[in-house]
Length: 157
Length: 198
Image 1 (cartoon, chains in turn brown, red):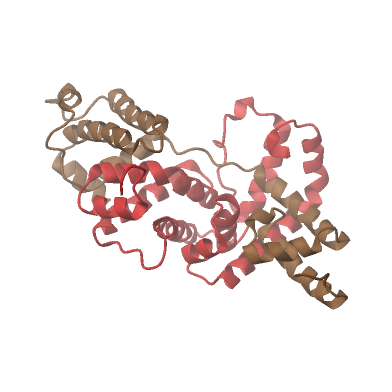
Image 2: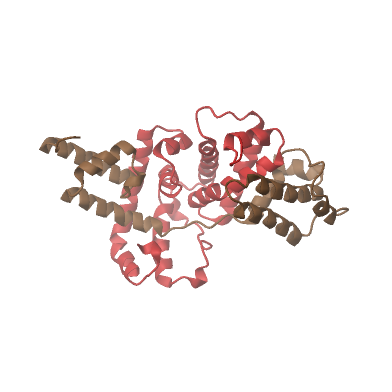
């Protein structure tokens, strides 16, 4: 808009802005792009600022509620249930740790997976291959401990 | 694709072909967000874990023939998760959730938290839990998961206008519930140096 809005235009803009505060809150970054331009035209308007304060109070309340992080055990279970072919090679050393055992010790399995996740977390954006390699190692160990029936059961559950 | 991370769509295609490394990458990339959204919908860790796991089991089941169909993969995944959560809430018979307060005990290391902040948070959690399910879903996706309005509407399979209506009604209901307790909340805020209190 290249000229200041008329009184009636301003009223219409204000009505629109109040609806956006109602839906999206005080943070204009959450508003649709077009609506942000409406807000710019109303900056400094007393009713607009009052509505922003009201919305901000609710935003602050909502920020109090946090969600916990998903645990590694959950990720392990989902990884174990993923369909796919068994790795035919790779990670023979880790796989051999559990050779002849139907189930890996829980701590060892968690540690292995944590190793895979940690490798993923420290990898740079360009380090996808390192992350995949770590995952493949963890996967190979998991696969060596699960029978065909276990995997099928997990998928069908 | 050379270097960089694979797109979700490419990983899903590979997972569908049996590539477990691709499946692992999807788990790493999306579990936290899906779990957080499920937790905010269902109100306790155990139920959120079940819903997250079911979401991924459906992904594994459909990965081989998954097609974008106009939506981003993540939006599709949120849609699956939200449908699972809404279905579970309905099955729980929680049309009036305020009658059955959700378990919210494991949000953070509560032993280290100040009592005031716990109380303030509990008040807001109760208000959120009391919202009708779809209003809570809209606020979860837009406010907490920071999806765009188009993505959130797609995840809930509604129009953007309908999403905005859910958001506005939800926020209004929250304000009505929280306003009478504003003095209590503000009193806690004055004594709390946590960055969450802004």
